[in-house]
View (cartoon, helix red, strand yellow):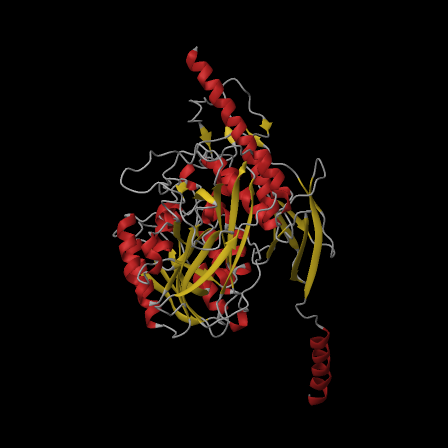
Length: 632
């Protein structure tokens, strides 16, 4: 018997060594339009379980590494049919076909209220009486009728540099507004004005400024040129670069996933996408990290006690068991999540609650001011907050923004798995690890050079001048590797402008020109205050900026691209300050400033701007036709 078993053992042992390991293979290719053969940038490419994904770059090229046993890849792009292809080698080129939609026989009730089927505001089915059902490609601007809510924004005005030489505001690293705008445009509609927060659009993109060299974790970068929408004005860019800390050197994390499982989350682009997103995040965790999962609907509950980050199967199993139903008691969930985070607090670590929801709180503390008070109380615990927004139709952006602003945290809107990968994988350190908190900027303008100025965006981040030196005043957080960009439009002294206005000479004060005490060559001075993540006393950084303006086309790619994004935002808002802005100019300037665009985000922006141009044109055409019909 022993003689028989021995050769069997040898055969099995040999077979074990011959069995191929679960190796990884790299697939490359190009994705093009099936009809016109043009490369498509920004196409989502992912594996069957969506755990591995990438995007095509500006030339339609992609590279993705998948397990050897992976059989297929799926390609998705807005306006095109989803396509799944079998992997037959290491090169996989794909041609995508434009999505066709159906017209059904209904009635257009009016230009602003089209009878639609499918998701509100979706590119899709508009039924017109008298037209037989047919397949057509449509680009019809849709005004989304929904219960989505956005905080009102009153645009910053031009301020006189003599009477108001100081401009003070908190930084903002949130990027939710851009992703939300993308969702509107990709669904065939233009966003409401209050959904457009220009600073978040600008800060969606990485500008890769030089890393800090000294002890301070922040580097200040400035640039000055003519404003593209008014060449008699100047545009000043102030950029901040946070120090990048490698993942292995980041402190241990104590995370609590706070997940909304109420009935409003029972949609494909909500809870299922949320679960897939958190699985991506789980894959980034280390053995030194801890994760707990709290859910809330009618009540809140702990579904996974604090678990080490290397127990990924256990964490993912808990995520897979989640289902949606019931009302939304957001306040109870937040209370429990902070309690769990406090019980597992890591001194010197990254203690954070990650809230994922559509923001539709309707039980307990639900009003914006109620949630604000609750979060303000919790932030004193040393636990940071990240909010991730999902869904459409009843999405409550106003609540999500308040929570992030008041909770020492950041806010992102996740509209697809590729965006989840950007936020939770590519920008893992910046999203979850704070290197400086309560970061404030105060700009002092030289009145001998500057007649008036306007900060573009940051309306809900403005502070009083005295708040800059007040360490009790809350401000924004900067994550590892994060960049922040602010743009000022400046009217130089001597330039006539209707924006500056005029005031009669004062009767009881001198009306003489200001006496400049400092360097007359300086246009402005940038002052910045920040605290260490666990600190309570701020540190001051100060940097003067010499008036060294150059022609717009001589500036860096970063300057020109951020200016194009700002101009795009002003057009979407129909800003009173858009002046000579145009979609054509936005597209041209962005195309000339794409630079190194490995992930395809800047190329995707150009596509969005082109789509918005068509939507705006169609919208104006509809308005003209409606006005003509009303006259008849």
